[in-house]
Image 1: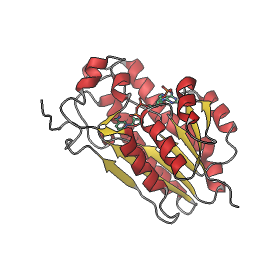
Image 2: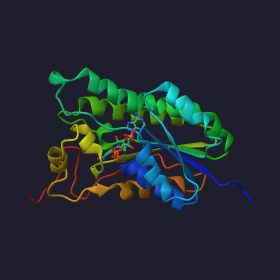
Image 3: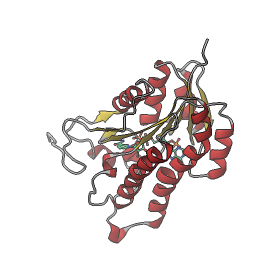
Image 4: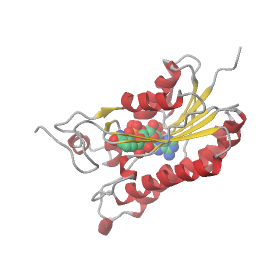
Length: 246
Ligand code: NAP
């Protein structure tokens, strides 16, 4: 019997990462989950037979090294950990917030990929899937720091495809629009009222919608590389234009 494929998912303690853990488990993967909140990881893993979880801070090189040392082999890496912090204009930009966004969304993605590339190649049919954003395609007022990191994710994804051509590793970017997760709570420092307004008067996507796209991309035959998926709610036309029934 062939070995069960392994999918490593970062940021799996909530939102898109947690839903992806379920979707890839259902697609036959053994899932290995990472994030900083161990209690949340435990909850996600509890419902998934033979799922593993380990604390992971992608912004900390030593944590990435320790996490990846526990992974015996890997077929799929879902670089999902990330997020936005703040919505200040550039005139009011806060260094700490920009640094955090760069560390998690960009350096974290690079560190995880660099550490697991040998194992993905050894698998003979590896796949790296980066969770980008429509913020990586379109600028919006107040988006400076987050736009910058998600445009970077798009660029890094393209570089990966160029550098890995000829190797058995597929490279995909999934770029969501509005998805109701903990994303806006994190962006607005836990302000539930402000976070709620982001989704007011429209039906946003849910994490499972994105997990569905990820599962689809990952389960195509190994010679088929889905380069990019951009997915938005019906009511969202662009990063800054949405129809709201208020
Ligand atoms: P979420 O519910 O806030 O999930 C973010 C995940 O990232 C959490 O599991 C969080 O876990 C993890 N994370 C944050 N910092 C981390 C770190 N330093 N090390 C390891 N894990 C870390 O938001 P989400 O919407 O599911 O976000 C997932 C991805 O989708 C992000 O890359 C985000 O930028 C992207 N995205 C979201 C939307 C949207 O509208 N929601 C749209 C486009 C793209 P811990 O706090 O436990 O570490």
